[in-house]
Length: 249
Image (cartoon, rainbow, N blue to C red; front, side, top):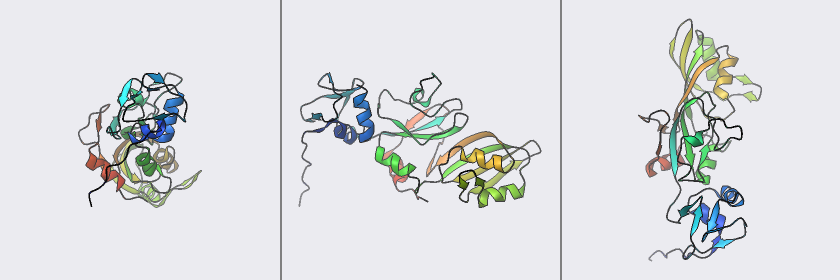
């Protein structure tokens, strides 16, 4: 039997924005209450307002939105010195300056990297995808390259692998590989799946080797490849699907 074409009927504006891939429904409501959404040239802040996609023109920050647009997910090679937020009341440099937030007004960071941490940071307008990647019980693996102070001992490496007692509990076992070590500093890679605040830094501090440099090289199945620092690119559909199907722990 031929598949019936979906019937398009008037819907609430936030639902329209979510289906068009601008942002999750909740974030779309935030865009509306901030006065950034217009229907037929008029600002719409009422959350109960409806739109007919067949005849009405919807814009966000002046950019027209259509149901065929679909969500977008991008990868940024974040440099150090930028906070992971889309705006900052204190005027600090934030990652919004590095990604096409004007073109995709609902873009949000999937997780965060510390100001002094570089590497792979994802952004998306797909709230469902973002929530699935950040769910506290179903995190994906993330690979970090760390340069730590001092010559790290085999015992410290094993403690990192077994789990470190932090103030918010023992960390899950991590895959830790020694890259190099000298009297002054050591280089290691760590694969973790938890998403605790400054987790890698706290783990290394706890075993007596403070982090000097930290870089996230991989998020789930994705790597930066040859993406230059400070640059971004849109993920392919295959890459997005690989994120959706990435093993969770």
